[in-house]
Length: 266
Image (tube, rainbow, N blue to C red; front, side, top):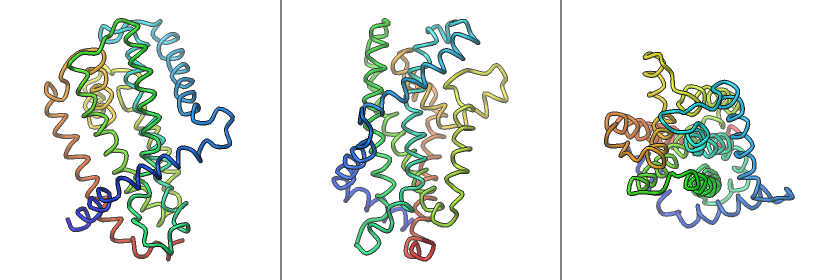
């Protein structure tokens, strides 16, 4: 628990630094692109169009999902995926790519994956605003239930940061972790409720173990279904809270155990 306390303290005492570095990371990651940070929105929009064409139009003939037109059901459920996927993949290689820049400084190493993840969070917020505007035009207006989005946003941020903390440390030890993570994230994407809902009970049970399922359904409940999802599905809420806490503890322990020896693996 000392490791977890130290990492959490390091994060909280450097919140301002994390925000400033995240803004800098967002600028430099798009500085060579003609459209700059606009690509943070163009890329997910293009992917959503492809998924809608295949899974909505070609396979489902644009049928309703849970009483909602597929396009709205899709864009709300998938909106957080781009942030989590990019945050995890970029965060996993953050320490190994930036360690030499801070190796001779008294720098809080645990915030490196945090600010990389946070830099992706800005794009998610802008995309979510666009999604909500589209849903508003489609007749799905904000309500008191929309407030629960704040809970899911925080959970998505903590979950992504926890995974990035684990993966960024392991990437120092084993360079193949990033490639393994890419394959795992593709599996996580398809074993979730982003694109479909299974009829098989076993598949549904496995799907509910995936935190992305909780987030996708939570977003939909907040924007489309007007339901207090985290209350009506309290067992999933408890499971996902315990999951992210254990993951964060694991990441903190691994990070602190190898932290002083990072230079030996570079």
